[in-house]
Length: 170
Image 1 (spheres, rainbow, N blue to C red):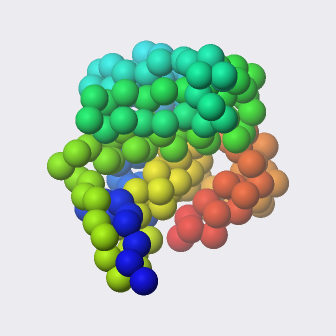
Image 2 (cartoon, rainbow, N blue to C red):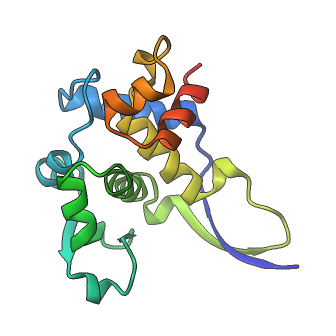
């Protein structure tokens, strides 16, 4: 069976963690508090060569957000943006995920392929963007002694994100 898929240059969790930690350091973002995803998007993205646009929900057709690597633009539904402003974990994760696509998946790092082989997780743009979002929102160097509930509360993320980050923090 042939699959048409997108494949990204390989990136490990450790490599993605280095990227997110570098961003936090470069822009002086505290690692012991919730990541300020909306402020980051509003004040830092353009410095990283990305743009964003808030789009009315009806124009997004049920899509929360999407990134177009060819022009470095992130389109975010109005409800996702509003939710992120209100601190809703899913919406903050969605924006972080799209920023991950924007930074990690430039046209020179992504290929479209038709293959009978399964794409490895570390070559999947979706896996990479999910890892990026988790690593950006939760500073894993600071969570070793925390419970999943404490991580979720401290970083204002979902229990799912907190569990994954706790499991992968070693």
